[in-house]
Length: 129
Image 1 (cartoon, rainbow, N blue to C red):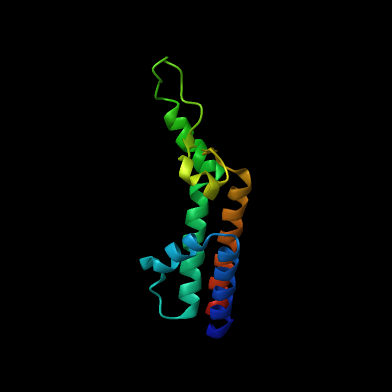
Image 2: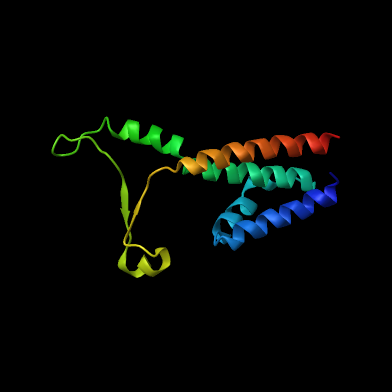
């Protein structure tokens, strides 16, 4: 791939992230030090790696590890912690569309992380040619 093609792909991926209502994530990734690369290939790879890392935080595997650690902590009733729910403030319910959010992993995100790893490897190879 040419540097121009890497640049076009970066803009496509950024637009896709923003179209999913995640302009905040796009801004976080672009504003991070990770995207200091000068060439479009480096910028694209840094963006995709950051995206992968952010998705991995919500992946099922990560959540399972966190919940295993939390189960070691006992509640006041000496019960294990079985889940974590975030209660949304009244003024933010319209933004999130819910009164609470269950913070649990998603098996689908594990496969997204895997797919992103494969894509990153392929893009590295195509830039080396």
